[in-house]
Length: 256
Length: 256
Image (cartoon, rainbow over all chains, first blue to last red; front, side, top):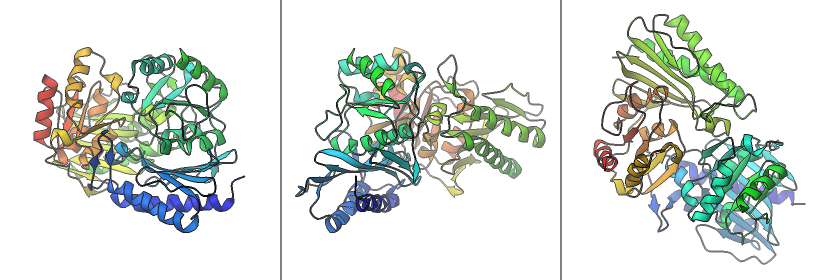
């Protein structure tokens, strides 16, 4: 059972990040391209700094793992995992599908997750087997066969190796249709019952923290491509489905 | 000079479409997949019917070309071109980047365009060499070289033929980075100065009506891949840039 004070703090962290991000959204400031061609913005730094300031005050013994600053080692088995702006390319292009990701891990497992979209004022929260969108309980869509599944995936170029492209193609050719783009926002849409299936790869540890609490809290199933639960040591391959049957059918296609 | 009453009517048409669409957004109702694998929803039909009802009353002599119903032939050289939901895949997946597209053509040329996002309450309007976002004047980002360009394109599978894929690849390999997804919404982002360049293909006549008034009203340049102005007989290939230099550099890469 997640402590209610941790849930309340997670909301405050998301509020602080949003307040730091919005003044930068759709304004030209400090887009810098990292060696791996992903953009970093001043908003990333400002948002993660705002979250870390609150954590340092409110939970000085907890660890922090974030994309922009050095790790803080936990003294108590509790770790906050942060991605201040997930979907940085979408953010810098002005698309309102970037999000702030906040997760609390206890003893290596994610127990609380927040996906927050400050421009649209959309917040998904998951913990203790439940998930909520702006306070309203969520349920995935159930009983969708692969042939009728609405699929989301962030970008085709993430499937770099031929074997990964082939695995994805085996899924893609059987589904109803595919919508590109989305980043972590798409997992919120899956938890709401709009998207049935997400298959992607190259997610970083900070990208996947809140996904399992939210997707599973809404009744969906999320693992890596081999059916293993997501954790900080996951290989970045994700398969999320609205129910266990669709998820299992997809894993079978990915396996070949 | 577009008649102010036509601009006012275009706003009313967008309002009516949004009111028809929003009750369906993120609700499961009547997603049906057409033979070409694009989804149609009850919201498409409801929105276009709402626009057509207003046009039939307010502009009975004007023609109407829309995606969902039969054409109405113009008696006066004026044609309203409608796409009630552009980005239907995004819409059915719950992504707030679908839009309603409304354009007025006079003697074959688009003179007034609206891109409306009702969930986010975002409206881009262009006419008479100006463009506005929720009433605020817009300007594209100028002076961006190809190597620093933020590029948007809706979906890789739209580049079906090898020659088209190769043409796009010649652009893609020179730009800063690419964000997939967006549909017509991305042209609004280009007009705002967030996106520098859009290269895509397979746009339908109803998809491209408002793009030129908005992009050019904001100071950008938009043509087909051979530099010809967009019209109802365009081949669906679009190249839009924040300024004439970036646009010309891109056309040169597309030509090979």
